[in-house]
Image (cartoon, rainbow, N blue to C red; front, side, top):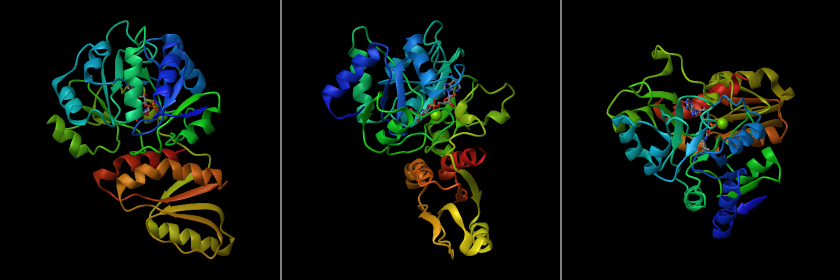
Length: 331
Ligand code: TXA
Ligand code: MG
């Protein structure tokens, strides 16, 4: 059931359901999340079951503000503190050492915990109402509200199409950021970028005053992170990334017979077929991130078998979009 997230009664209803161990989907500025009381292993188990996600994949715990971090993390390095000050509330998740006995199921059994303070008025109102519930719910474990391996939802309607009408969904409108948060692992002494998002590498490095490392540069094995599986975020249609020239050549070769293909590109391609869907990719990386998952879902809904996407430009502001497209095309 989709309800208006701006309504105080809806927030009360959602907080009550969460305190009773139920699942509720809610909007964040990045994508919609499928939430449960992070401290209840039974409630968290419902998330894994609903998503069809392996239960050793850790979830992000959402908190109302930085003061709640101490409830879940045993230690916060100085550079992580700087990142929270610079970007919270906002699209940044920090992986921190987990307090023993706390949120074990949400953490997928790992000794670390992912924490994020989202910048969305509905998420914020919900987190506050949960913190005031009796007994209080001090954090919401919430992965993206899609079935495992699928494209993340950026509208309430997307969530309903994934899980049906029985799930309570707070509607907060279309997500402003559109791709999932940047994830920085803060458990290894230096900051390590696990997943790029809309915050650029130079921005993150400037805020913490240190270079950001990549998992491949680190000696220890990276923690399990489904968002970092090579093939992920995939629509049903096969996605291929190509430069503008190859896109046009492929259409020329198919000529009037081209069909079942959708094109998402900055260049305007020419085709002799009237059965090719075309949609223009914005020149701005942030705008592309905002619409990317909705565009992939729309192409899927129109039943195309192939989605051909022009490779995004180089440049750090495109890292998040490039990452999601590479994973979608690896499926
Ligand atoms: O923007 C977002 O981050 C959205 C919204 C709802 O906040 N959430 C989201 O959650 O994308 P999810 O579960 O789809 O992706 C979370 C990623 C996964 O790749 C997970 O493995 C990783 O975060 N993660 C969470 N806790 C971790 C931990 N302790 N160590 C390593 N990776 C972790
Ligand atoms: Mg996800």
